[in-house]
Length: 112
Image 1 (cartoon, rainbow, N blue to C red):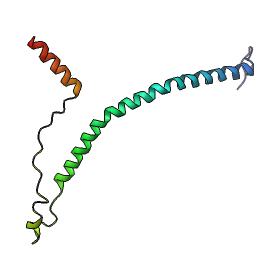
Image 2 (image 1 turned 120 degrees about the vertical axis):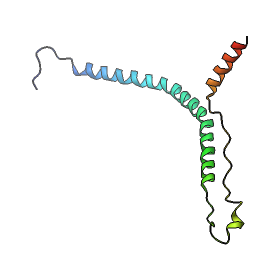
Image 3 (image 1 turned 180 degrees about the vertical axis):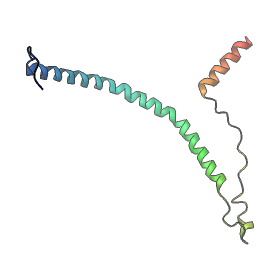
Image 4 (image 1 turned 135 degrees about the vertical axis):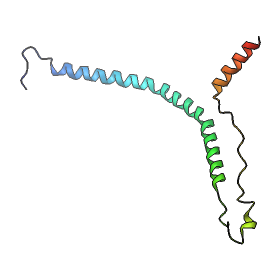
């Protein structure tokens, strides 16, 4: 490819501009890092209750799906209580906390 006519920028200016851009980008990323870490901490703390509930529901599902391996054998009556089907789970309110707060606020406001 041929060079277009006109003056070309000296090499040292190009290197200097690239170096300045790298320094500015490094400083910007270093100053942004604490905020990113703080946001990650907040999000991870918010996930703890959700993951606990998920684990509990998964364990209940596994427990409800266990079957009596002694079914149809003479040992079945001895293990009947151990592998009894779990009772139906009670209804759980899964409304997010912010929606509950908004609903409570509107109910309070209507009572006034």
